[in-house]
Image (tube, rainbow, N blue to C red; front, side, top):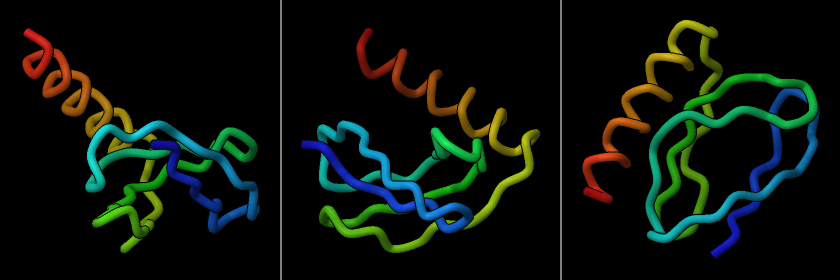
Length: 72
């Protein structure tokens, strides 16, 4: 399923693929490159909070590690 997110900084709309209806993790706007933590529950955006670059990198690394162990 493609989920649409509207950037709170520049109003650009982007989409990304979700397997599950819930997601919590990092998101980066394709246009302004703003970094955010988003929470999606039942295919509905619940929160979108700005992040520093360091926190975005930390969350992205944790997400990548979780994804690696799910596949293996």
